[in-house]
Length: 334
Image (cartoon, rainbow, N blue to C red; front, side, top):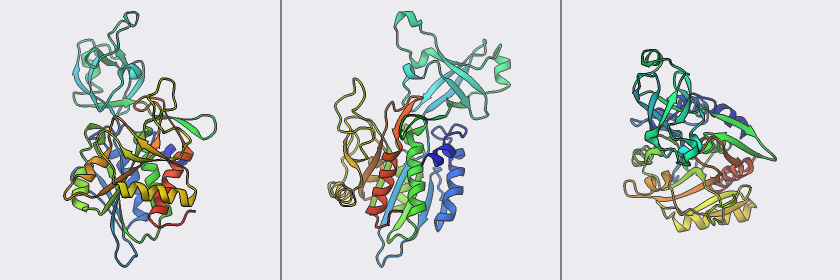
């Protein structure tokens, strides 16, 4: 899993609506593992592995490719770039960070706010300094509409824990790639959907699900934890295994599917925990309500400090998520 992340993280930014870089790499890796690989009108990557069973179900597995970031909306005479957020930005965590644009230009995200005042950074008070002397010099490198994100990083910590960005949701993509590699002869038709624009309203998963009309769906994304200082009480922690989602603010998962996943985890001795998130949402809700709807659930990867430059997770939790999906779908663990 760590090897996959080392390939998936250090790419040019793949901000919502600009996912081509990560999509091209995943497409290359999925092509030999599936029967068909295509990109839909929204930009979702949809890969089908046909089932060998007598009456295959249509199973949708999904993880999103996009990440949060910024878009240039004005260039000042000084050469500073005013940027608007794409996705949910924690400016307190982001200010003072190095950012990179799609063409490789780097800069720093800065706030006008006086740190001594104690005022929290606000979107309209932040700008990117690329070191340009004036507007003309800045415009030689960048233009209105160009996008940037915090520079990607990946660092091993103690044990099997890692930190970096954008683990949301490159870890979900890595889990799906691992499942595709290990689940070689499924009974069901497996549609691997690597979705776009999740961070701005779960937009890509909806048309993908409409086209597939799945019988059942499993979504792979990160979830918050309750094991940090000052965290809201939550029965999810790093190292506790795959988090089987029961609900979040946007979805109540299919109760039978939740029970089935937990039963498989217990029978196969796969570490798992129950997730009830009192905020947030993922592609699960978009898929569940598309068309005539489907039985939808999610297997989440616990993650600390989501939407910062130091997202943290346990590799064993990611492996447990892949193992649980494989066993649930009838595959053998390798």
